[in-house]
Image 1 (tube, rainbow, N blue to C red):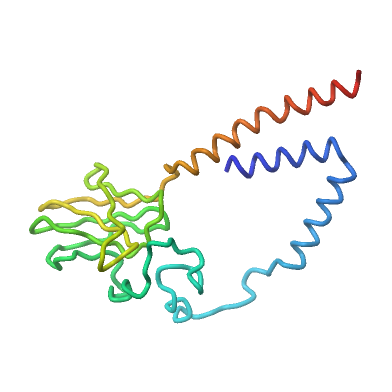
Image 2 (image 1 turned 60 degrees about the vertical axis):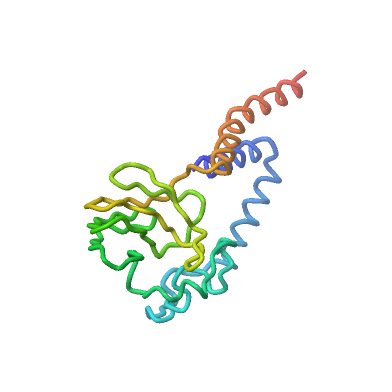
Length: 194
């Protein structure tokens, strides 16, 4: 969000300082969007089309992390979002949204759970509101979210957060830029007046 606001703010200042160049770039961007953009709803594929790449939305796996091995992970049934390695726990899906998955699990013994989601930095798992470690380097299911739970009934939350060093660094740079750019532009404007 900060990046979009930052770019919009920078664009507005750039256009104010250099109106001819800013207007030309805006027109060029508009023409580019008209040429390359697609009208929503212009195609429709049935659900079978998307089953060819079940862990991702990319056909050639170009967005997959390097530790993910698709061939090894195809052994998990496609209709199971989450599995117990021992196969003895009762699992109930309470909510499943893109970045937030909530389950209720009743384990009859200590066990390991695998969720059929490719791990990427930012995913975190909470068992009864306590953060647990994710092991995404499993030999049999490399790249999937895997974690251990103790015996008993538990609520599991698997959420995608912004808690990564790269995202924090990017957000910090964006916020600093938002504050420094107006100062820079005002100083430049004052120099021109003198």
